[in-house]
Amino acid sequence: MSDIQTWTLIFVVLTFSIYIFVAYRSRVSTTSGFYVAGGGIPAPANGAAIAADWMSAASFISMAGIIAFAGNGYGGSVYLMGWTGGYVLLALLLAPYLRKFGKYTIPDFVGDRYNETARMVAVVAAIVVSFVYVAGQMAGVGLVFTRFLKVDTTTGVVIGMAIVFFYAVLGGMKGITWTQVTQYSVLIIAYLIPAVAVSAKVTDVPIPQIGFGTILAELDALQTDLGISEYTAAFGSTNMLNMLLITAALMFGTAGLPHVIVRFYTAKSVRAARYSALWALFFIALLYTTAPSVAAFSKLQIIQDIEGTQLSQVPSWFNTWADVGLITQAPEAPGAVGAPISELPGDTVLSYSDVFVNNDIIVLASPEIGGLPAPIVGLVAAGALAAALSTASGLLLVISSSVANDVYYKKINPQATEARQLLVGRIAMAGAIVVAGYLGINPPGFVAQVVALAFGLAAASFFPILVLGIFWKNCTAMGATAGMLAGLLTTMAYMLWTIDIYGNGEGIFGILETGFGTIGMLINFAVTIIVSQFTPKPSPLMQELVEEIRYPGKTELVAQHAQGDV
Picture 1 (cartoon, rainbow, N blue to C red):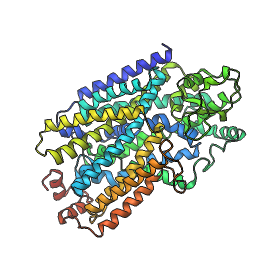
Picture 2 (picture 1 turned 135 degrees about the vertical axis):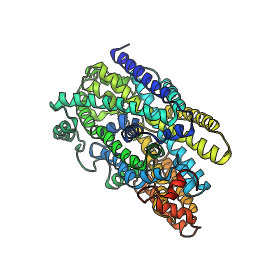
Picture 3 (picture 1 turned 60 degrees about the vertical axis):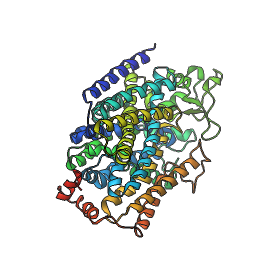
Picture 4 (picture 1 turned 30 degrees about the vertical axis):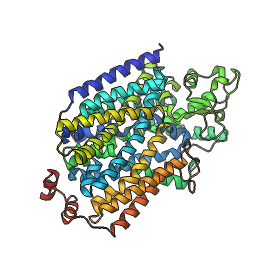
């Protein structure tokens, strides 16, 4: 076993043991504790849990790779803008009002605000979004185990499934919350330490957010010499229309993600819900302002290591990742798989344009590329697993609560005891973990691409009916149901039509599948508003409640509703 494998195993065993211990100490026996942690999580801890829930395998593993390669610097900024801007929308438009409304899940809010038909559509949408999103997390888990512990992808995903099953099923939202606080600590340390070390080594500036600015001119010149558009050039890899649509889809999708929104129900109060969003932005910014530096440093070093180097003389990190199939010969067509590097003669002189580097390896490989010691490599692997598993557990809880609370308890057996509801919830979560594992072994794209699809689906299905449900008292049940169906089905159909492995990849006006969620959202808004003009209005009591949830303080009607009296 190599030093890297040894240190990876040490950090993985240590961190997983801590997660399991925290989950065991936080185990619950009530539905309130299982679904929303009893509504008693302080704002800073809730913010850290939101950040861990949010900063998934896409953020930790894949985002820097998209910025470096798929987005070529400027184009990758859509992820930074979209994934952070959504929290402004959450803090201003949704979080405090949903917390005040006082329900467990998005389908719960939809069912109470609109009707049971709308609830069932919301359940389906929540499950679809969560499964698409969780596929990216389990794929990330498999990627880490494949590279660092030398097990196959299936084995790696199964290990991840077993760990998530233990602490998510045992502790519910309470166990997941405190485990995620721990996981955030692990992932942010694992991300920042190599970034600081590489920045200090390359630029003598130990602050990566500042250091990477000193190498951009060199990187621009290097890419120009290779016939590639400058790293900082605008619209070099993505046109203006797609930049706008993808940014918006990620932003509005963030504000509509079920596993993020449920976090605000765990806050102690409406005020704490708003502050939770503020703390989450702070914790997220620590990683998101560092990602562009990791991308730039890694790309500069990769080009310098590859360009004009004989295959027999490439650095060890190159061969390591080529051996697991994540560095290949450049494919002949977009979406195709390149031939293995091993098929080239040893005396081949490599050119950067002849090599395909998978987006998902940049952060995991950055310590090796930067020549950092084995313990740092192992720590980064543990951080990547923390990011993937923290988000996976939150998503699986959304699926579990949708099935157990919104389907079983609200529709099938309203007389079910808390013990029976918990049992159904845990069984649903176990089933969801199995499906998530399958999707992780057979993902429909690279990690961040899969996750971006989930954001588009969330934007197209949930954001309009949540905003209209809070700010427009005349939004009707039939309008919301029709809008959700129109937005979700249109977006899903377009994604299946255009995503590389399923469709023709062309699209309408060149709109990418990751940006079509914005169009789906606009369709949802339009259908909801039009249908609401011609269908029965909500009851006078509901209209009054919608007005009052926006007032400061807790009015009598809101208090009665939160307690289930109205």
